[in-house]
Structures are given as structure tokens and as C-alpha cells.
Image 1: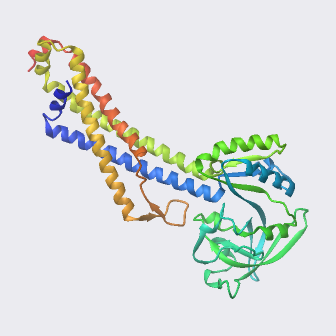
Image 2: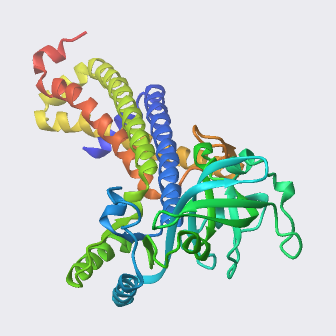
Image 3: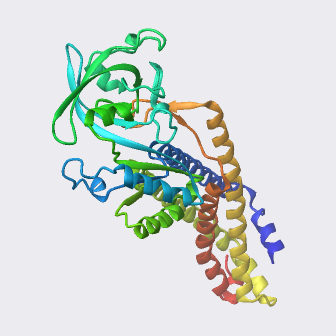
Length: 414
């Protein structure tokens, strides 16, 4: 039966070729879109881990913004307990701490509101180093307490250009004055030197962003506490299991703390991926419908052209189920062939796009990002199944008609 079905597929080669090309183009398009969306998903996941770490531990009032003043800060006693529990976890690799501060920053001529993250300069976890713009000076160095790295938008408001940044072994950089309220509500001011410029690609963030050494943030706020502990694990896959274990350990230790994963914190990533998923499903549905009606028309034409043939094979003893299976096998062969060729075509197009190293500026970003297609077999499975399923479903109606036709009517059909 399968051998006969395969011969019937290539009986009308022009029509079969047209059907296969149509399926292949639809499958290739869907595969390329899926690979592109998956590359965005994968890249934004890595970016989120670099920005937030795998886990962040903080007081619940810090996350829900319900704290009054700085009551959410973690003192040394709590911090020591958290670190001890982290060291007991099998997936724990390293940690760092951060302290956020807000206030005013200015030069002799201009000033602006800012939000600074106090970080440990020597730590690579949740570091802002990867955001340092080309030719934009240097990042914070270990041991420094009077330096700052500014977002390009904030630097522009203060009239600071990257040409004003001096070498680290000479002129320290343009001076700025920072003023902020301490944890007890008193005002404090300190001098800083700008050593570098950061560029996130989001102008609304760059216009308020600053990064200072943790020691400076604690000094100006007059505290030795921190707001959160950022944890690096051995792998992304270990995030959820480690979170569950640490939540249980913290509860047993009597610490009322909340753990957020990188996926919880990357809200913008979730919004982007929900949008991309909606586009992919729409494209998939459109290709399904296109292939469905195209193959339906082809198989229906084949049914009418072979009416007397159907009557003949029925007359010599072929059962209805065998006729149905014959037509269904023909449609399935066309779908599988078109799907396989489509995957090969899509893979080739994706490879060419990756090799071309094209870049573009997505909405909301000021930086050009690479246009790449993630070529993994998981991305080929969905488009291939859609091609095969749409072809198979579209063949059911012509196959049923062929199986139900009366032998006498089929034999005298002209």
C-alpha cells in the first residue's frame, strides 16, 4: 500500500512539486522565525542572569516597597546567617551584596536626580561592567571608595563627555558632588570622580543610572547593612531547585526573607517573550491554514481525476479502509517531504543570516543588537509537525470521499 501511495505521489510531478514547494516555504519561514525568537529568548535569559544573578535574597518589604525608610536593610548578623546557609547548598557557587541609594548629583554648573547601585567592584556577579561603552573610560576598581560610573544620559545632563575621562594612572576624572539622606534621615554629601560611562541601550534608564563602590554607598548612608544578597549558582537549571531548598533553610533558621529568581526580576523579558510567542502562534496558524487549503485542493483534484481508477480497484476487492489509507498515505508523504525540505531550507537561510553578522536597533533600544537565528533541532520540531499535521488533516476529507464512493458510480464517471 505504501509503495503504491509513493508511486501515486509522483504520478503528477508538476502538481506534487508545487505542493512540496509550498509546504517547504511555509516550514522554512516558520523555522526561521522560531529560531530568531528563540535566540532573543536565550540571549535575554543570559542577559538577565548577568544583570540579576541567579537568585536575590532580601526582606519582603524591600520587594513590595512597603518599608518605611531603610528598615528593610540586612544587618551583619542576618547576612552571616544567610551566607552560612548558602555555603551548605550543593548548587551554590558565589555571592555578592548590593545597596541602592538615591539623591542628587551635580557639578559646578548642573545637577540631576540619580539612583546609584552600591556594588563590590571586584565581584563579577550582577556586575555593570559589561555595560561599559566603548571608549567610555574604566569600570570601578577594587579598593576604590571615591569613584563613580555614570549612565550616558546622566553624564550628558551633567555636561560630562567621554573625552573628559582621564587615564587611571593620572587625572582621576571629572569631579561630581553627591548628596543623599542617611538611614536616620540626615543629609550627607561626598565628592566623587567619574571614571567611566555606562550604556544600557534604554535611554530612560541611562538618564538616572550610576554605579558606586559599596563602601561609598554605606559611608554616605551611614550604615554597614546591605539591601540584598545576590547569588550565583552552578547553572541556570539549578535556579528553581536551589530556591526551594534555600526557602526551606531560611524558614527553619527563623529568617523572614523572600527569594526572587532571575526570571522573576526580568519583567521586561517576560513582556517581550509573550509578544514574540503571540506572533509565532499567529504565523504558525496562518501557515497551517495556507497548507491545509492548498493540499485540500490538490487532493480533491486527484480524487476526481482518479474516480474510475478508484472504482476499478474497489471492484477487484480493495476495501474502503484501504482506499482511505492510500489517499491518507499520499498526503502524508507530500507533507513529510515538504517538511523535511523546509527544515533544510530554513537551516540554510539561518546559517546565512548568522554568517552575515547583521545588526539592527529594536524599539526602545539605542544600541544595535545582532540579528541571529538559533539553529537547534528543538526549533525545527514545531514547524515540521505543523507541516505534517496540516497536510494530514487536509487529506482526510478527500480520502473519506474516495473511500465512500459507490463502485458503479465511480466506474461510469466521465
